[in-house]
Image 1 (tube, rainbow, N blue to C red):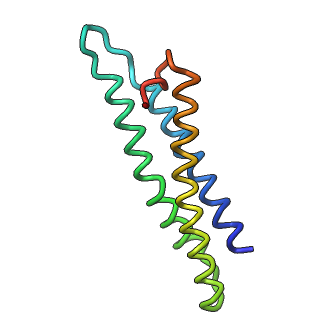
Image 2: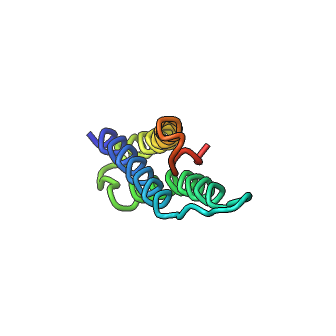
Length: 112
């Protein structure tokens, strides 16, 4: 049961950070001229949130949702949380890539 909650925490955190990346990308205004810096800014925010996603996910899962049980259950939970954190990171990257290809002509298209 505890491992399921670790995976759910990871998926929800990844989706939250992806939603945050979409909001930030849409909040950055287009710049005119021959060398605008807004695509670089959107890409930087996307990858900054990609780096923060696993860190926040693991810390949130460990300190907030850690079960108060014996050591064996806690070790199983930490293992599931570690795997879930990696899966959440890959989910963030995969969905970000898919969104950037779907909205290639929009603001989100500058992520990759």
